[in-house]
Image 1 (cartoon, rainbow, N blue to C red):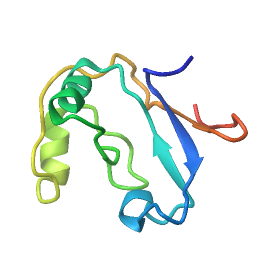
Image 2: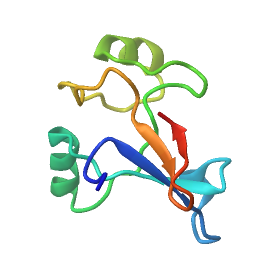
Image 3: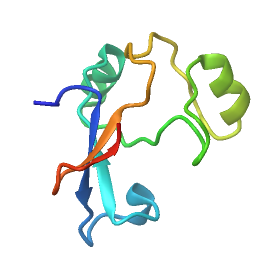
Image 4: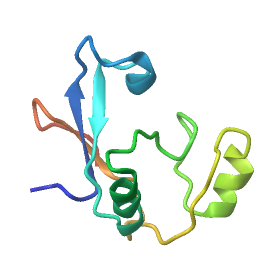
Length: 104
């Protein structure tokens, strides 16, 4: 089992999934997090969080709050401090239909 955990699965997007969720993609990325802060946010909110990764498309991932604030200050409403999930690499992404690893 990969959930909850740092694995994102790509599922085909149905025609009912709006473009603001899937972007320019034919799929939807879904992850069930084990991160305690993200889990607490979902529990307090009472549902899932729709989010993007914390970097501009094509840029490397950001690993600290200062980088996020400097780079995304005009596009992010709030940054919550806390420890990262422990991995020094971005999470794995897999195709839900084939199991193919898209990003290791």
